[in-house]
Image (cartoon, rainbow, N blue to C red; front, top):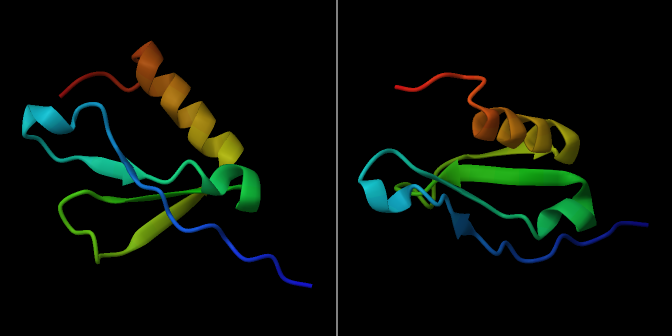
Length: 71
């Protein structure tokens, strides 16, 4: 039995208005597939990376905590 993935509902990074390089993610996939797809907001037809929910959650927590420094 296969489960169809929901259509992607892409959300832009909250930093998209700063003019920098930005990403979009499709959080609606998390509960249906256990993965979070991520793509470049400037190349909507480009490749998509998918991360396990736990890994993506840890990454976001690390960014918020400043674990990766600043540019």
